[in-house]
Image 1 (cartoon, rainbow, N blue to C red):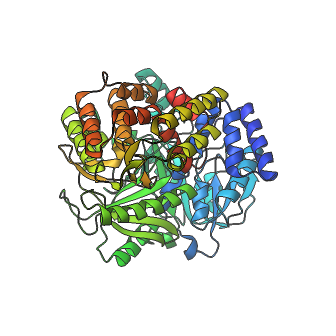
Image 2: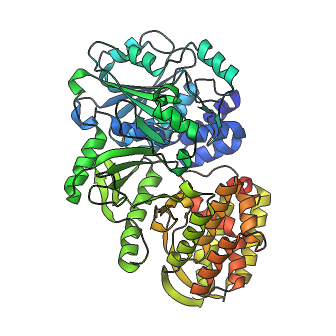
Length: 597
């Protein structure tokens, strides 16, 4: 299966049918989808998970057509019906119709959207060729996300049924790399392969070619955006007609001289892998976008000026970020915002937790740097949080640099030690159940392999022997503190700890710092999760600054070596429990694949 218009494997189509049957018998989407992923071949499952991400619809924030402003808020989505982009369209008020050539994909997608988007009862149409079976102007929004496998409706047909805005998502003929459809796996072709693709492509165009195809009576010239690094797995929505929204270029990117040269020569629009072109009817061409309306509403609520929209980001966690700026200086002030928008049900819940913990930490622990919360709630049909942007950059921009990393970890040890909510006390059997045992059971339930389940039961018994009766404090628990959630200045000093959506108000000490160090080691050396965990567990393999930070934290909180060894031993279970608590669905055999358990 591929997200590029290639046919699904027969095995995947059969798995989709079984999942659809299960949902029609009463199974939840989560239950049916998790079984589908376990049944599917690994390659199919990986690509399907990438394709299903709701964050693929982040571009909807730049639409001019809004459901509340049109008489019939219908949206037609053409392409692979399995794409998750139609789900957030339903969340913001569009009644969706999915057009695909595959009855199996359409059936599964209809049942999925019904369950994930209460109130949206999607229509599905199997396309067999020829004219579209819709009246002129039947849809306020038409989205051509991918070419259909056997050819699709003509562009004139799609514009005929579009009364508001036409969005085309397309690959660039001159793209210098492509996503495989699997998370984080990109392909950069060699010179001969690149030349063959450019000269032999029959369906892909350059940006100029797509602009020419978009020229149609009644429609304004399209607004063009890059979906970077690739439409299958994009992070940034980058304006190609204006300087904003822009691509963030940090120290890591600035180290790539060839990339910077290409950008300075204006080659980014020529070579970027994918585009989104948005063509509105001329009557809508000057209407504000959804993002502009949202930022105006936030300015009114927060009593601050609205900054420029600097970045539009699609996160791997299925939220969208809007980042605004009011000035060029390093210090952030009124109007410099980070706006989180939940595009899935799990993300909306996590954003509420994030907002609650930001307020709690700011009130109880003033020495702990967190962003200032400005707003949390429903606005313009979206669930959003708005906070002041922290100064500096996220820590991955300095990954591999010893000086900033040493400073960051020393800062993290000191800051995290502030988050004590209860002084040291022995761990009772009841507390072990709440803080440890329930997590083991959750992970075992979704581990997907009998050997893993047996290992988890042995680990749980050993953890109980090690911890019950042992004395240690309880702390506020971030639960997902990786370097991308740490904002630092140029020297590595922490300016803010970000993204508290997975947090707990009373939990185990030491995990957050240990997790940060394991993930930083993993990123710096290009390791897998299992190897990084094993290295940081071994005092002989730790780097000096890693040991210094862990020892300093343990000394500040009075943690003995036995407690530290116990938590390090079942660290993968805590990582998996955090994930299983917040994922929309369980990833197949995740603990076994990531940590070898």
